[in-house]
Image (cartoon, rainbow, N blue to C red; front, top):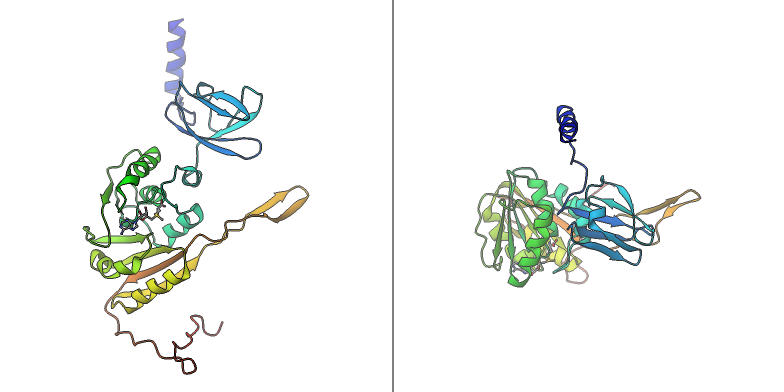
Length: 304
Ligand SMILES: C[S@@+](CC[C@H](N)C(=O)[O-])C[C@H]1O[C@@H](n2cnc3c(N)ncnc32)[C@H](O)[C@@H]1O
């Protein structure tokens, strides 16, 4: 008996069959999806069970199963078990603050050009959704420095980050008011998700490498305007741009193809700027000849 088991094991090893890859094991994160597309995020613990109105499913029924397995609850209801994507994860993580949604996280990575090995500062830490995304993008050779003023939420954020980024060696968290001081130098990128980013424009400029990118994520147009003006008036920030990301999901079924009834309409604006050589001093804004206020702005896309 033992001989034949060893023989099978030998065969598997000689074929280099990865016996546990693509199968769930103790401690893994699992996304369970029911027939109505309700989603639940759980961590596998062989003593635990998943309970919902669809019935009960012991974790031991998931451990050892292949990713994408269809399992049956105590009430005979089907549950799909998958490894959560990063987007699934940040959508379901326990929140200590408003989080940045996947649609914006993806755009932030591109707009700020986050690359493997980058030194990135973010403020504030919040629930850790952006931190988790940045850690994955900078990889093991990069560093993320995160500032958070509220000590009370750091523990939860750290737990959230640890669940998907077990090696936190390249994350430094400062429980501090970032408006008072930025400790790091030679930063490649800075991402600000806090209420008054214009207060940091000079400090960020002093802490960044030439050509570095500063990105602000802001929920209101008033903040966008104040931040953009501070960047415009700074002698070194240039290429100041603002965008908003809207994703319209579609409902595609055999007899109906149309936009979904609901969408996430507004989350925030993304403002980016780059550290360049010293620019010509900016002229004060000209007066609007009719109202005495500022003149209407020139179109950024003349001729279009
Ligand atoms: C909108 S949340 C950030 C969410 C985070 N980006 C995420 O995706 O989970 C803003 C955070 O900034 C923190 N914050 C506000 N002012 C700050 C300051 N002056 N210094 C450091 N953190 C600050 C708040 O406590 C809050 O946790």
